[in-house]
Image (cartoon, rainbow, N blue to C red; front, side):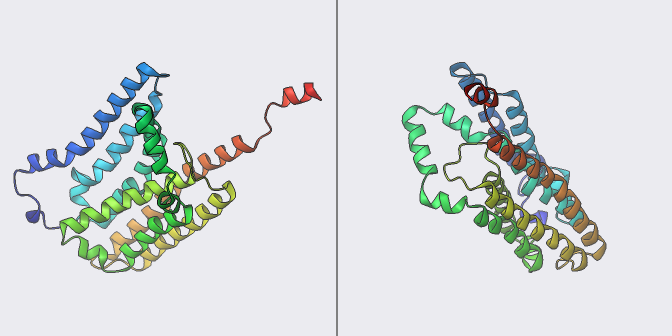
Amino acid sequence: MNNNHIHHGSEQAYDLFLLFPFLAAIIIYLLAASITSCRYRKWPLSRTIFWILGILCTALVFVGPIANRAHSDFTVHMLGHLFLGMLAPLLIVLAAPMTLVLRALNVKQARLLTRALKSRPLRILSDPIMTSLLNVGGVWILYTTNLYAIMHDYFLLYFVIHVHVFFAGYLFTISIIYIDPAPHRSSYLYRAITLIMALAAHGMLSKYIYANPPAGVPAAQAEIGGMLMYYGGDLIDLFLIFLLCLQWYRESRPRDISQGTENA
């Protein structure tokens, strides 16, 4: 991206402008956690930490040295892709933001939000197959067409694509593991099969990038970027697999065995 197109004022003022929504997200979460902790059970510190880390991972892709270098170095861009599309969504899902929002709202507002979450459009949008298409399908289009080269010439397109990468990653994560309330629950088997297919498609794309650099990307950078996508993605996916298996185990294990024995 040509920085002359976007830097209308000083660089520091521009960075502060970009940082504002991320700082606001952290402050709002901290306030909501603090206020609701006075009304209900104390909000877990671990969730607050997950939220801050998730927001910071997202901010790194838009502001700072990684964001600047990603415009000219595909390897750094791919590092940003891992932060924005995989690690940040996982951390933010673990922060349970929807649960915190429901705690912070009054009863009437919470019921309206719950009704919206149960709507048919969200049922379709939160289906694991749909979220996989949005998530993995989106990056396939980005890296196997000229879209990757074109987005660096248009700031708005660059911004929209990165926002899509984040929200597609977030939707995919909440469709696989349930931390917040999930009105449209899919079976564990369905989610596991979908996750395996999505991981396979992600791995195939990383190998494709290794052998077929996106337009304008030097072969050496594509090779390192492809390996980073492959191994880095697998590392993050391991946590996703672990959480899915853990939830599956907890829900399917025999419950209250001692009571059952006594009753027998």
